[in-house]
Image (tube, rainbow, N blue to C red; front, side):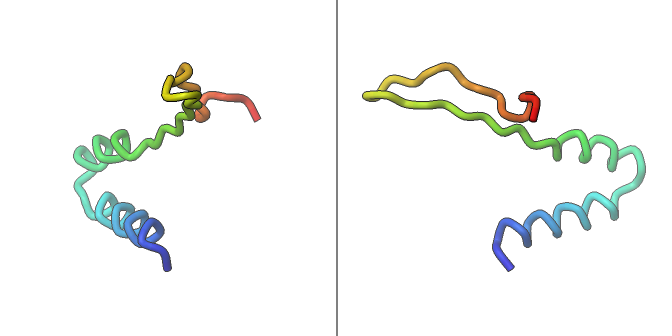
Amino acid sequence: MSYSKYTSITAQVTRQALKESERAIAERRATQVLRYQKWDKGTPSENIDLSKEQH
């Protein structure tokens, strides 16, 4: 099992153990955002938010 998978599982179990009010707050924080930025000759391009793109 990879470290990433391990931390994902432990975070999920921890959130499930919380009271309902705290669980809702923790679930909102758990949202992941994936962004991409190309660098060319030391200069960054604009950030591209991959989580909002249509597949």
